[in-house]
Amino acid sequence: MPWWPEDEWRRRWDGEDCGLCADAHLPTNPFGELIAATEWSYLRLAANQTHAGYCVAVARRHAPELHHLTPAERSGFWGDVAALGQAIGDVLQPVKLANLSMGFRMPHVHCHVIPQYPADDPLGPLDPQAGDVRLAPEAWAERIDALRARFLALVT
Amino acid sequence: MPWWPEDEWRRRWDGEDCGLCADAHLPTNPFGELIAATEWSYLRLAANQTHAGYCVAVARRHAPELHHLTPAERSGFWGDVAALGQAIGDVLQPVKLANLSMGFRMPHVHCHVIPQYPADDPLGPLDPQAGDVRLAPEAWAERIDALRARFLALVT
Image 1: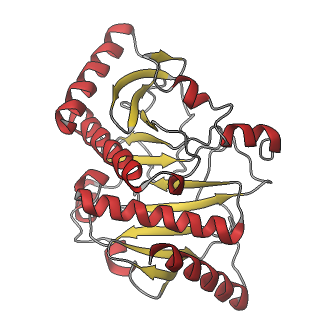
Image 2: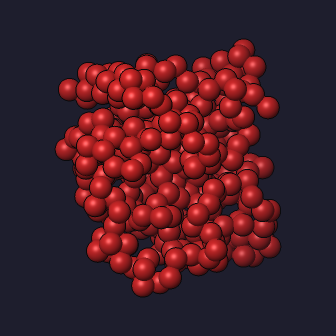
């Protein structure tokens, strides 16, 4: 399909109808669970754990593109993405992290942090939507706890 | 294929055998041409212009992951990525920018800035390697000049 209808895209762009403004701060939503909230960002574990440790960082304030954030907001957001990646690395030992900031569905600055492991193909492309691995409740809670503890130790 | 052989990956990770350390600063290399260099980054127009305005920002210092940069380096790099995206937006009027920082081939922080246009499919996935549009020399030089002028106006 081509891009979204112009009026629909404009409402998302302007923040009038933005799914991330609506649910990025919630403890749980259909896409994952909140790990932590900082001055700049919401850090969430993605429900789809095909890539173990896959998280999403969402800027607190609605802004469609990186250059719409203030320098302080942008630095704070990427500092949080970096700490989140470091936490994922410490807990799960991936071979590499990917940081994908697109916003083709929701033009509100966010970044998919997707760990890669030895069985993954480095020649990509990488599809954040691929697979559908859901953890059992105990494993899910353990992963949240481990990432939250490590992230908070890094940022405080 | 699975991930790179461990010793090969280690040499790239440590910067002993890093293609971006070797050629990101060059005026031209097989992957594109230098638009500008700042304190933090090299900004390059990609040879493959399937997505008009596709650029790559490369951190000056070798570091495999975002958390290996200092806070000043990280903020400076993302400030450059944001200004580059703003320049692309001003010159080419895309509907959205994608910022993809992976490093699966070269673990040296860099970011693909890939504009999306009304004919593009927002449901992705987005493959930076897709297509192979090469501009004629005059059109290439015009695009470099326009992006360079706008980028430099934004950062200075």
